[in-house]
Image (cartoon, rainbow, N blue to C red; front, side, top):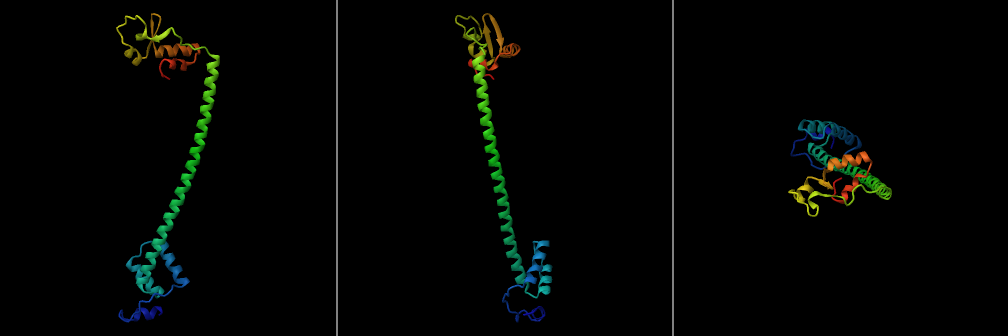
Length: 182
């Protein structure tokens, strides 16, 4: 059935058999779809007259094409996300290797420092409330919370000890033997 015959027939006389579209018809439908994904009634009737096929067949072609286009779009998005995930996982593995290497270097440096540096903190330093026979009104818990230490009769806060140790060039991690501070 050609273009003029289909549109000149009464609706009751038209056959609703779908024919396979020609390459030219598909090309025209594709270019129309590229410009607008939604088929407006006006465009549907214009394409029907131009291609000589029923408007219903054009509507079905558009519906099928939109479904294929959406699936392709989802597949493309999925593939892009998959690539991003793989890149992120690779970067995470690389960063983890770097962290492990840095930890190993840090442990090596700490071991070297422990071999060559005499600890600044010895038994003469204590938490003030921890002294035997101490008649201090402060409690051990207060001293620990306030980071207060005693050396003989002198009372030091951690910040003072830190500043002194820094000036002396001592390893500041040695105070951690009493309490994890740094």
